[in-house]
Image (cartoon, rainbow, N blue to C red; front, side, top):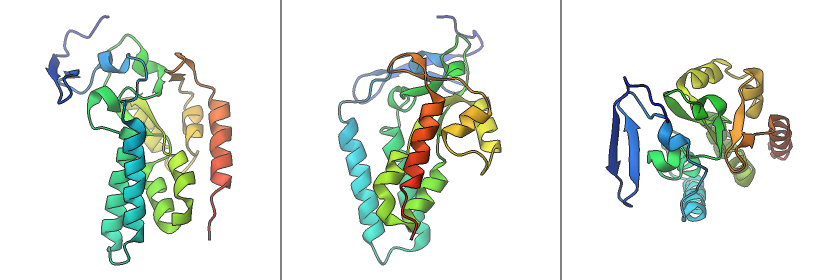
Length: 196
């Protein structure tokens, strides 16, 4: 696997003894080329993040600014699972550019912006499960992430990827993701939101 010679690769074991590969400029491609393999406690971590969001929402004395920050952190945990490159960047969905041969700087990109998810959870707590269903991430290059961010409040979710004509790979099958189907699924989920 060719790697840009200007990128210095560092390797070290994490707490679980798994070897992490990191470039000095940012993460490079070796980790992201590995298949989607959630950690064994994937469901537990997501369930715990959901429980914490419920606790945060139920606290009548928590100031709004703190509530927003805490919900935001739990949403990050829900999508990232573990802040180690071996998990954070081996997500199910990755852009084709991330999986290409070139060494690229990458980002853990929230398909539906975390800010929107957080605001929906706080304003409409009864929608927690629907909102968490929209909490999906995709690994994108830094350039793709910047382009997606520039779209602002235009297209929603996976439609942002369609608007930029980004190819997304479903690493469960290692085939292109059906963005039309993913957009339609998100539209159904958004329609299920109960906005009191």
